[in-house]
Amino acid sequence: MGFAIIYNKEMQSEWICSSKRVGSLESREIHSKINPDDYILRIHSQEYYQKVRSTPFFKPAYESVKCILASADEVERYETVIVPTSGTGHQAEKDRWRGYSFFNDLAILVERLKDKGYRSISIIETDAHHSDTYKLCKAKLFCISGTEKCRIIEEMRCRVSREADKDEYLGRFSEIVKAVKAENPEIVIWYLGQDLHEREYSEGHLDGESFRKMIEQFMSIPARKIVILASGSRDDVFRGIISAFRGDF
Ligand SMILES: [Zn+2]
Ligand SMILES: [Zn+2]
Image (cartoon, rainbow, N blue to C red; front, side, top):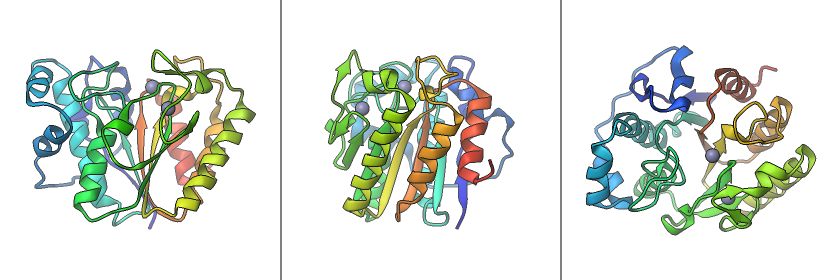
């Protein structure tokens, strides 16, 4: 079964630092007949969509949505599908963007998976930021700071992610994995913020080894897996995470 990384070189933008991460990967083509607009407009208003269109962020964000939509098909071929997103993210609301989240990739992915007939979908959210995505989609959401929705919020920054030491964080993550296993979903989506890494910009305390441990636990969930590899800016951190998924340490 193995795993696949879905990306598009068009996602690269001088405006978004996380978009450069895909630069060193090899390419392979995927064709899709799905119209991204149909899905974007289920989550966002027409007026907002037009507003994003007029920004330089539209192109990378639009390509990122295409990759997210493709992941719902590719997950039928591979056990794990990873999408390093750019310009899309869990923080985008119906009518507003936050940070570099212009379209809500998480909510769009859930819509697509539901159209494909999946009924039980769990989301694990670990990022240095929180989101209101639980308001936009119906899926079981597990956040590092509590189940169902993001709690312990301070200006949408995740206090737990920024303050917990490695052991506490990993302990909380194991609890989430246990809870997801108890749900026994057909698909689990992991919104994995690269910004949790200690070398990134969010004062996180997780090192490469902590990521490896979380990935190992995540991989033990008996469901199809889609990883939205969000935020972050560093290529070395990105490569470390990808090799942990590959299983070469
Ligand atoms: Zn973040
Ligand atoms: Zn959260």
